[in-house]
Every structure is written in C-alpha cells, then in structure tokens.
Image 1: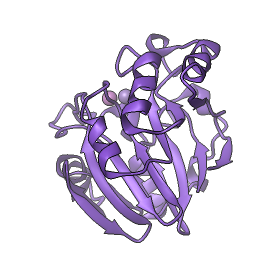
Image 2 (image 1 turned 135 degrees about the vertical axis):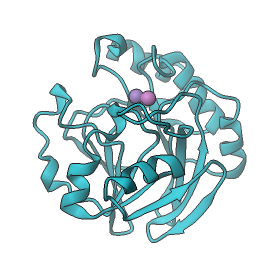
Image 3 (image 1 turned 30 degrees about the vertical axis):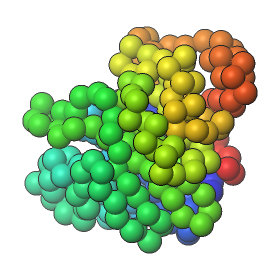
Image 4 (image 1 turned 180 degrees about the vertical axis):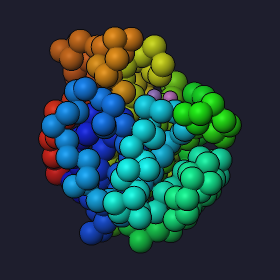
Length: 226
Ligand code: NI
Ligand code: MN
C-alpha cells in the first residue's frame, strides 16, 4: 500500500488500484500549503466524523472527483442534502465489501457535529483489509478498551492513530492503543496543526521506541510504501 500525508488527519491510501482519501482538511491548514488539492482526485472519501478539521475540503474534492463518500449515516446525509449524492452510509459494527477491500466501521470515543452545528452522529474509525494488508484508521478518539476487539478479529499491519492530546489521545495513550490493536507500526496524526496539539517529535518517537514500536511522523506531502 502507498500512503501520502496531507497534514492533520488527512491521508491518501492507494491500494487495489484505488485512491482512498481520509478526513480532508487541507486548504485551511497553513502547514499543508504545498498540497495541490485539485490534483488528488480520489475514488473514495472516508470521513471519521463531522468536525470541520476532518471535512473542510470534502465538497471541493467531491466536485472534482465524484468520489464515493463513506461515513456515518448522519455525515453522508448532511453532504447528500448539499447535492453530494454519491455516498455510502454506515454505522458502528457494520462491514461492507468495497472494491478496495473489506471495511468495518469501529468505535471511537469523541464527539461529532457538522460544521454548521447540526447533528453529526457518532464518531468512528475504520479497519480496512484486503490481500495487500490490514490497517486501522482510528479517527479522533480517546484510548478505549474496545480497541482490543480489533486485535481479536484482525491482524493489523499498521495503524493511523491521533497523538496530539487535548482533543484526542496523546502520545502515551496512543502507544497503549497500538498494544491494544496489536501492531508495532503507527503513523501519527492529529498533531501540530493547532497550538493545543503541538507535540515534541523526539519525545513521541522515543516513547514508542521504548516499547519496541515504531512511530512514523510523515512530512506533509511525503509518500511511503507500507
Ligand atoms: Ni474531532
Ligand atoms: Mn479533530
């Protein structure tokens, strides 16, 4: 799989010949000024919840791509009313076989409202598996014992975990979350974008290293094969 970082919690995962874009918050993010949003052209837009810092660029990217929006029933319905009608509604515990692989929507401990304040359902995360591998995209969440259920069911190769604290788990809890889902490979997200979530990179990487885990802090615009 190929992973490209667009800053904050936004990533493009390329797998099975498809482009999956997660939580696009690019144009309002000063750190992501180098990203050409209109060139992304995903096949799917996956949204963990309705907060502005996860959905800001959905309309713009959808208009250029007509990508299928995958999120909670409430989030996709809100976009549907704005005319973004190519969507797939889900809810926690549900699975669906897409042409990029099997996706399960899993729990997250957070909140969710749409940018205009309307109800955004409950926040979630995603586990995606195909013959190239299996990964967990946690969305915004606290550490939760429910993450152990993911390890029971899946063999997680790597996980996207929030590490910025204040609004989500911080570094120490994210390291425990990696233990809970039983993976050694973590791609950090939801850090440095705002003053509340600025972190010390060395401390973060060392915290994971002490437990035999690898924390990847990708550069914005960087692409890795994983
Ligand atoms: Ni949020
Ligand atoms: Mn957030």
